[in-house]
Length: 350
Image (cartoon, rainbow, N blue to C red):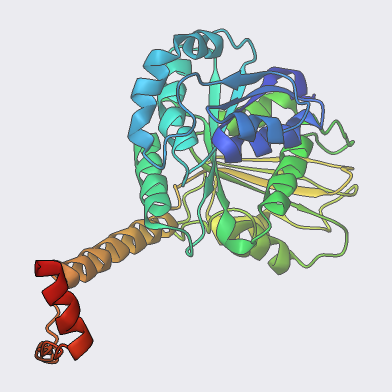
């Protein structure tokens, strides 16, 4: 029932490397890819670090990914040889290394028909720079154009300044989704059903909760105010999966979830989990949220251009000081010779 052995976590760039470390610490396989030696060292003793030679970061310009991957063909070969069926491509949308390489590597992996490719993109907060908003917007737009992608997870860095908390929370949820082996007499959420959810193209969100949480709280946390970008309100949903914490559905009902996200094709339920886990797949991409990032980038760029235009051409002129007139030169009158001096002069001539 566990999908743990079938999953591989490929972390791209700084943000992707940190997510990769979360899963490695939970016993999963994967690799961290980065051009920065410092970023790779900061990950500690995690196995399988891949250094992009000649590219110590992209300086915010994700377009450099093409040149980087052309110069590091061994990475392309390495990615092509990943054996696991499920590959999670994890990266920061606002960065340049991860967001630039992710869509190209996703397309490369999609050439293998048996693979399930699941991007995990950390979206920047509203207070971050123009280039980060622009990069995130462009990377999501490129993901939309790839046919055959599986579930995509959109982490929302807006909800907490502690990105480590977001990363660890996501890892805990995904670990339970992949590895939980609980079972019950009524029904079970089995491996084939979880694979079907991961295969669904579109956004996927998870929610994991302890006992006693109200249904409204759980749904709000999963769909609006939690670690994932707010879900669209269009009620598009492919599948719902629930692992109930007990022997029944007293923690949450499928009907309550359907009321929020729409009627799915399937509802999968299991019982006796260590916590309540709710999963929904095949959702629309969070276009409303990502569009706001694009709008912020556009507005800030235009304001910056206006400010630059206002100060363009302003140069320092010459300073003009009225200097005081120089005093007239003092004429020294020759000193009248004394009689002794005259006498000496006369003796010298004679």
